[in-house]
Every structure is written in C-alpha cells, then in structure tokens.
Length: 213
Ligand code: SF4
Image (cartoon, rainbow, N blue to C red; front, top):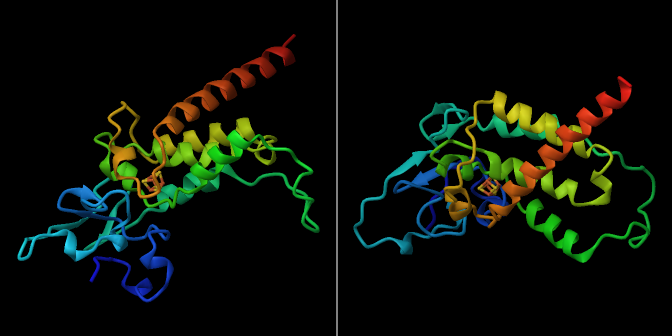
C-alpha cells in the first residue's frame, strides 16, 4: 500500500513511478515523506513502524494556495515555464542525430536537469519558499543545449521575473531542496541559474550601450 493524493490518477502507471509530480504532500513534516529520493507515490507503508501515527499535509508554500483538504494550486510553476517560451526549432522530418554536435558533459547535465518533474517539493522544503531549484533545472536543460541558445538570455530573464512575481523566496544555500528532490536535481544548478541570469543582464546592458553609441 502506498500514500498518494492523486486519486484520479491512482490507476495510471505514471502515478506509481514518481514521474507525474502531482502528489504535493508533506508526510511527517517532510516534503515527499521520509524516504528520499522519491515522490510520495513511491513511499511504502512498510517504511513506517507498525501502529505509527502518520501526518499527511499539503505542501505549505505561499505561492501554492490550498484549494481544499490536500489539494494545492501549483500553477505558479506552470507560469514560470510558460514565461520561458518556446525554442526556435525547424519543423519537418527528424534531423540527423549528429548534425548538431553536443559535448557529452553538456548532454549529461542537460538530461539531469530535464529530469525535474515539477513537483514543487523543493519550494515546500525550503525555509524561504524558494523555487530556484525548479527554475534552475528548467533554465539549465535548455541553456546547456545548442537548440536552446537563440532565446537563452530572454528565457532566463523572463523566468526569473515571473518566479519573483509569483512570490517565491530566494536561495540562501540551506540545501533542503536538494535533500527532498525526487529527481535528485543538484543544487549546483542554482549556481548555473545565477550565472545564466548575470550573463543575460550583462548581455542586455551591452546591447543597450551599443545602441546608444
Ligand atoms: S527540482 Fe526536484 S523537487 Fe523541485 S520541482 Fe523539480 S523534481 Fe520537484
């Protein structure tokens, strides 16, 4: 038996593999419960002592309003992704796999970042209610690949602007996000987000200065 808030999805395959991210639960005070890494749908009752009292709560983050009982609205994360926009890619038949060379290191990092399931546990675990681990994963997986480069600067600027507007806090390096992340996204991606943001701001300023010459 497992704990899961996604009753509607309970019979679906994705719901039992920790990849849909809809559970949004805190179990015994820990986002996604005490068995890390993993989402609540992967948390087995055998992880608890017989007769133990289990406290299940919704994620408590100001940017995720509680709708009812255990149901929260995580639309803020969708709006951050939406602000990032699309990538410029040619339509048509699939390109030859080696036509755009990607360094192995960057391809591996991009895959790691793309594993984020958007569950919001990082923000729920953070004492500042920060969604920087989520945003950094979304920014990084495109910034690391050539296909994501044309909109690289505008993407990070827009996503960070919406992240702030949604009321998420800032990172103060407590690493709580990394500890609860079911996808094992590294907090080092937050450093990458900060570098991407600084790079984009400097690039913008350089363009404005050049125009004013
Ligand atoms: S970074 Fe991890 S904890 Fe945060 S939304 Fe993505 S998968 Fe969930």
